[in-house]
Image (tube, rainbow, N blue to C red; front, side, top):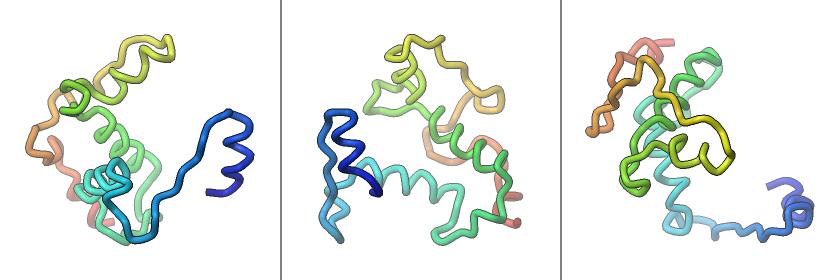
Length: 112
């Protein structure tokens, strides 16, 4: 990570790096990659997608209930710490199936 020493000094926090070829040391990252693979193939050319497409995918992942958060979404858990308003569910994401499959057809994204 570029300028990690400056970031650590400015924020007064430690910055840690995982060992190469050690995915068990970065569980959150690996889980996020797994979620992204539901929408984007490994090595996908992101230039094929519009900013709105990528924003929609990001929102779908962030609006997904998480077992580790007692079935709250990331936003529902994070926003109260910022003093922000309660999280609003994206209108097209009233219910994300627990199977991990998208609730709307994103196949058009794959064909771009």
